Amino acid sequence: MAIRVTPLHPHLGAEVTGTDLANPLGAEEFAEIERAFHRHAVLVFPGQPLTDDQQIAFSRLFGPLETSPEYAGSKKSRLGRPEIADISNLDPEGRVMTAADQRLLFNRGNQLWHTDSSFKYVPARCSLLSAREIPPAGGETEFADMRAAYDALPEEKKRALDGLVVEHSIFRSRSLIGFREFNEEIGRELPPVPQLLVRRHPGSGRKTLYLASHASHIVGWPVEEGRKLIEELIAFATEPRFVYQHRWRVGDLVMWDDRCTMHRGRPYDDTRYRRDMHRTTVSDELNSVERERGTAAA
Image 1: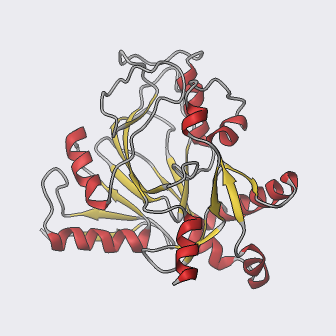
Image 2: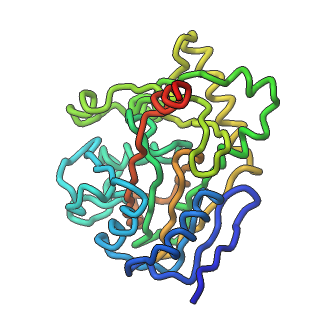
């Protein structure tokens, strides 16, 4: 059966069928998936009930995997695999967390528009999320196309944004929801980092905004002035015309390009219903500022 790619939105998102990700992919099959990924930025693979090992194997085709620290609360891992981020409301014993659980509070920050790992010096290339259990209502994930948003900006605005550098920090995004109870080593491991506000997306060659709730301020600008611009751009880039909403089904694997999209989880009753999602994250190659300097030097 041949791979079929069906667009889900005018700007981003496509459903991919006709492949079995539980088994090794041939070179041509992978190349077809990669082409679709570069074009659509978000790929939905329905009916893929993967094990963690199978998800890790498929993810590694796109590059080296990040490992996920425990940002808050118990340092005991429920899943036991550093390559798998536990995007759930379940405690280490598999029970639904209580309202006072620090990890549950931390994870609610994922309901802000963000880009995975933009707060790391070498940020994420892409993320892959596997739905193992879903709540009966809510918990959708929305994706915004930052390439289409950049294209829609007035030319004068594009010129004004070119070359701006933004400082990103996990502490900035969590401060927006009032969370401060990080595990003590996180501050040492994840200091603030610079990222370009406008980048060229390697997969498509198109220019793209690079925004997130992790974006703190613009380097060299007064802090509040920079934050006002960041908030303005996030509001523009997440207008409905740029957004695809995914309604999860058990067995869905969804992957997205962190270099040219933002996403957010939607609320659900997280102290009542189980939501078990396993995420792998592929690391990029360079910090965006380094990449731009390398391009300029060439």
